[in-house]
Image 1 (cartoon, rainbow, N blue to C red):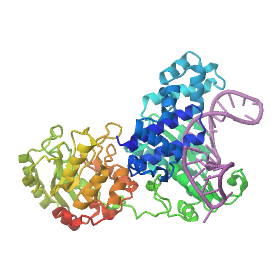
Image 2 (cartoon, rainbow, N blue to C red):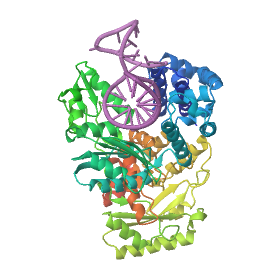
Image 3 (tube, rainbow, N blue to C red):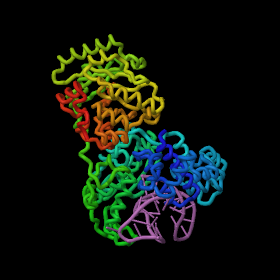
Image 4 (cartoon, rainbow, N blue to C red):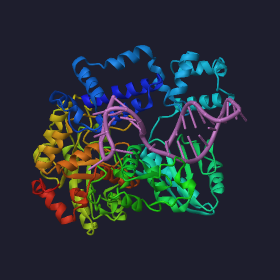
Length: 586
DNA sequence: GCCGTTTTCGGCCCGACTGTTTTCAGTCG
């Protein structure tokens, strides 16, 4: 783990323990800010410390700098050590239980000897909780329920699971009588790789009817909250869904507020304040110093109807939802971001020759139905035994079959290629004379995914610098929530890729999303070419493309920097001479 | 703990909802 991420984890634990111990909420918040800063910091924090420039970083002050220096010198933070001696670490696991906040957890620990989830369960069962003040039967039942739920489910859901759920919900609720608008917001709208809760916003003639339709659905396991304008439920699929019904005239303000991110909202509120205004989910209002919310006093907003109105009133460029994250300067406009429709080529797909489910003809047909002009056949190489990887003889026969298929599909540019294993030492799974016979080479790591960062960097650099490799497929090999994959020096990779004209892939499979968003940001800055591929093994996998595009958008990618957006002739020119596009971007 | 065109102290986003209370603390997003 890099020192930045290691330190971020320490500050995260520090913030949680401080919170439970009853520390000032603003101090806790300041430490949470440090976590975010460290996670999105491009520079190595040890180098900043050595240069004495830590305090120049926004969010890092004197106190934090002292802690970072202590960590670099001794491997620990004294304040954290002290809190860990004082408080059981198992209490942190209680923060993830819905309805339990730091104040309650502190009380449970002090007054009922609760130290972790197991002892909380015991304390509920033996009646200790009921003896505490403000612990009625309902509160205890809710805690018990949440505890069950937390133990059964992962805390975040992959976007590939959440998106279809949200889509079905929005379709169904949109059909309820009187619903004028409905959409999802939150991390799903921002295209995050995992989703906590699904947030749905709506405008309805009779909000009560929509709330009723929502909370009485068959797939609702439990209604958590149901008021006049908002409701929260837990679905039997294991996700929480929040619905908010709002007036039409503040739709933009609501969308903005519930799309987040939280950090982006805080920045926008700060901006509003500095301009003598206040921003909430009902609109942007002049700030008259009265603490009663302006919308409750009949004060007209400066802007509220659309997100564009609000950004304009704040004199800021309209920000794409995928770019509303911390670490992105709100005053700088993005280049127009890549869209799904910009992509005309799928450059990484499998057939029945290895572990795919489609024939060559079926693959072409699937691409054609998505409006593609180019499809690459890239089956696995010989070492991927588990995926029925192709021997040299089978590969050459397969290439021949692809060439023959071209006559049957004159409307499609059909590329004969391979997804070639990158061995642990950086060598490739076929000899160069074989690779030279292919139209396209996607080189990917599949095994030895736990090697140390230095070896992983050298391994991937060798593949990037190989003159016959066009694309590095799923560069880290990570699987979201299952394995972390390689942890190479991404700056070194993107620099090398940019100078060689090799593209790094965003694998659109929602379990991979590899490159991840923050790596895309680095790649975009370095001017490195990006490929967005679905790695299709079935027809349905072609529909993963939007997840890859969202990840690309989160990294700030424009179509011009993505090889899948090239017209067929330009794409063929790059494949013939990848150096021709080296350094052409950014 | 951090920050600063109201700057070295005093503020830090803010509204909805619940449960346990008789006016509000705690949680959530």
